[in-house]
Image (cartoon, rainbow, N blue to C red):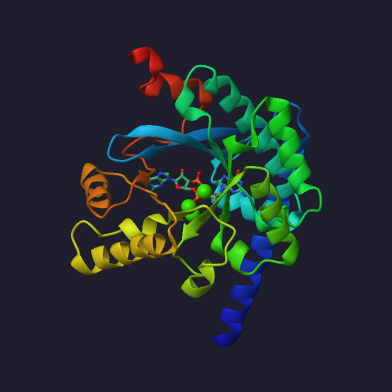
Length: 279
Ligand code: C2E
Ligand code: CA
Ligand code: CA
Ligand code: CA
């Protein structure tokens, strides 16, 4: 039985490797396609509470694979990180996001802020900071328009070079947010030293928080860490009015989630959201 289990494991690993290889090949083709090969960016509003006023847009990559249809970034971003394709993918996302937000900003003041997710693999690239600043300038955006979302794991485990990159970009006016805060790498004592401007609380903290006092206490504690560090906190994954009410009652001033808006293609952002023209 042990032998069989081992064989099964081996087959599974081999299969996973093969599908990673195929995915990497398909991703290379998409990245080489001048039309994006099915890769595109959607934007999700970040809102201020309790007003619900839009304070920024997070760019999230999407891939409509030619044979497999829509694939989750949770599937292909890790592949891109393994292969180094994350550099080209990140550049594609920034180009699309900066272009979209520059176009939207001329019609909607509140959306001048754009967040992009930066992988640790990108932050250690020597010319990453230059590429980011150049991209902003090309799109006619200020450095103050950009938020880089980096995970705790990146910031905690990072090399001097990644920290240098963040410090340099911050000095130019870029905002740094710690993404997926509270899961995995929470060494609270070290957060103090992070080159970060705000925290994004993983949506796991909302699970059960409306009904379970214990879950609510955890959410409260995480929000308390933000307060202790004097860093604003964005609660992610707010899906219901009850959850929105709860986070407001716990003193959280910013949120994101399906309750406010799903990630949208740029052309739908203006339609779906209240904006200046509404009076
Ligand atoms: P993330 O940065 O934590 O992004 C939040 C995820 O939660 C997104 O999933 C978003 O669509 C989803 N979400 C937003 N509101 C809700 C809600 O109310 N309920 C639920 N259940 N989910 C919600 P998505 O777009 O599938 O992205 C997954 C992860 O993939 C992201 O997590 C991020 O780590 C990564 N990712 C996405 N785009 C990029 C990118 O351009 N570059 C890099 N490096 N990573 C990316
Ligand atoms: Ca994010
Ligand atoms: Ca997150
Ligand atoms: Ca996440």
